[in-house]
Amino acid sequence: MNMSLISLGLLVGMTGVGCAGLDEAEAVDSSVSEDATSQATQGLITQVTGTSPVTFVATSGNETKPYNQSATSVVAYTRDSTTGAFTAYPGTGSADGTLSVPNVPSGRIYLKLGSRYLVSTGRAFDLGSTEWGRDGTFVSLPTLVTVSATGLSPWQSGDYLEVYSLNPGAFGYINGGVTGFPLAGATSLSGLSFNYADMLNPVLLDSGRGDVFSLAQMRLQTSANGVPYRAMHKVLDTSMTQVEGQPVTVSGTFTQPVATGTFAVDWRRSAFEAIRTQVNPGAVSTYNEIWMSARPAALSSALASISGQPLLVKLNPDTQRTDIVTGSMTYNNPLPATWQKVALAAAGFTKSYALGTATPYIMSVDIRVDQEASAFTAAPVQPLVGPVQAPQVNTRGAFQDLTGVGADASLRWSKPLIGTATNYVVNIYRLGTSNGSTTATRVAVLHTDLQSVYLPPNVLQAGQTYFAEIQSWYQPGSDLAMSPFKRSLPRGRASVLTGMFSP
Image (cartoon, rainbow, N blue to C red):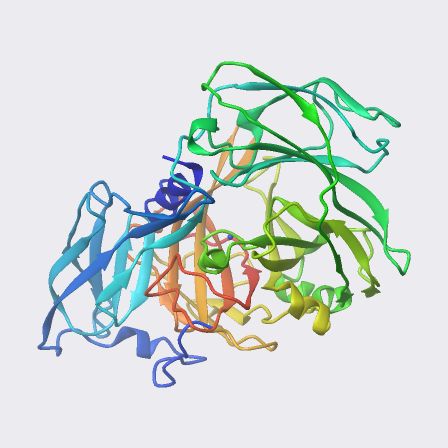
């Protein structure tokens, strides 16, 4: 099973990144009453169903397979508004990717899939996803790759290497810290050796299945307006077949792709920074980045971020939060000309959480924008949706630390001030300690089109401490509460981090 499918399994069954328009009768700002419609008076009995097709998009051809749901814990919960009690309706998942929950009363349900809850009035859920690359084997054991090659442009400080293979969707990067990393002025690699398992998506390569190992020089350059950036420059393509745990050696020559392109942005970094305190009053800014790449058009609905390796342009010139108009940035393009060019802008923020005297845990979130690259060049790049406002645990402000919230606590919030949120995703983290450090484990994630959720049974445990990340999503054309793994362009996301709370 390849990395992408493993990721899907974790999302569906965790153990410890403009959907359809909101129904205005249910999307309330200051009350959770619409989410708590009594099920006792609902007479219609229904069946909840779901399907889980996974489409693998590869250069050798696309393939669709069902995701095996036989090991997934499936339960539909309803909540009585009078008593506040949840009622559980057990269901089953099957190897063919289907799931079923019989005899469920009509009304809003919390469909539990492992540790994920889909909060919806729907009854037919699409749990499918689109993944980049063929279905393959994910490498976990140390698997060394050693490369000797000529043809580099003189290496300079700030350059780095991208690793990718388009057919299996493998990718990663090398930015020092490995044997044989090139020194300044080098025009060749002599025994560059790295652990392939350390790559971001290390799918085992098989030349017999059409896989090509590619290593690209990402070169530090300066834009027309004097802004430093990195861009695809030269690429080594070579045949390679791997056996997990066994070293492999390859050689070849870096060449410059014939196809070239340009990219330019008016990057309103100040617009991201201006909403930092809405993430949390104590949030710390950490980074600002823009990536530009290309993908098959079918990957517009991919689960993972649309823009990623292999990158054509990477822009993170400094630590400032001031606006930048880059002017033209040039790149060499080894990717198919028919692929859709896409871009991502993100601003990162952190907040620390500490239990007692333990070293704090640093939680990282971001505000991001995914669009076609042409949209980045046509208009200023700024947030499409902002963080939610006035988050609360029950009726108390959630930015403060809270105790005694109860095991059946609710979270609620108001709409973002920027843009229109089409869905919300709430991640619940449990804090702990290990070796003198605070740890965080995600124990539940809830998808909803409402501005409130109740936490289902057993999410919060007595004696434990938690915090929540509340994400606002702008993603026209898909509904994260009915199709949690579907994506579309354009899309924006922004996070809020609460204080700590305990039952």
